Image (cartoon, each protein chain N blue to C red):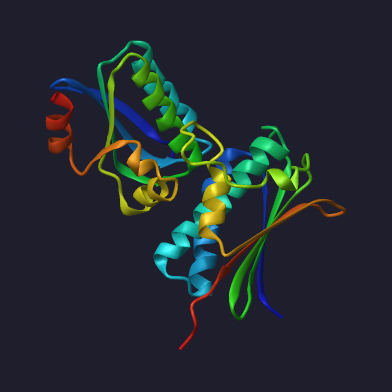
Length: 138
Length: 114
């Protein structure tokens, strides 16, 4: 049975700060070094910001569930929402030489995490799974 | 903690001091202050990030918008005092090559004069 922590927030940007603090603690429990922890925090923040902006189109009070599982070799973070499903093909990094505001979140998520998997429109809602490999324990 | 944004005129530049975490919640406040300066066609804008402990892509997007607005009237727009974690966000998005980034205020003010 993995060590699992389930967090519930609503789609209000003011809660992102609380979420970041919690994810930082989970990363620490999982044994990630500080620099990698801060990057995983960024990736989860970006993913939840995308849920607020795109899936819920800025509507507050909608549920976002974050399930963190500390597995033997990786930290797995699943983000669930019941908003508008995104086209899985659109979940890709954009060209970085196209200098414009917006669209950098996916690039950051993919740069930081070792695995990114998006499954939309399931019974449980949209599901984004982010994995970060853990350093080998000595 | 809410982000604090204050402005200060120094030498040839307007300094924008930002304090706190810049994310989806707080970036609209930062955007408002920067766009006010670009609307007034402020010739040189220096964004002081020394007290910014966290920045996400919405904060970065705000700075890109400021840079682009400033470029429209050929103004100068530079960043100063990035902490390692904030710098890493710019490096991952390759924006460290796009923005003029200075280590400290003294150097930034000297460079922006030229």
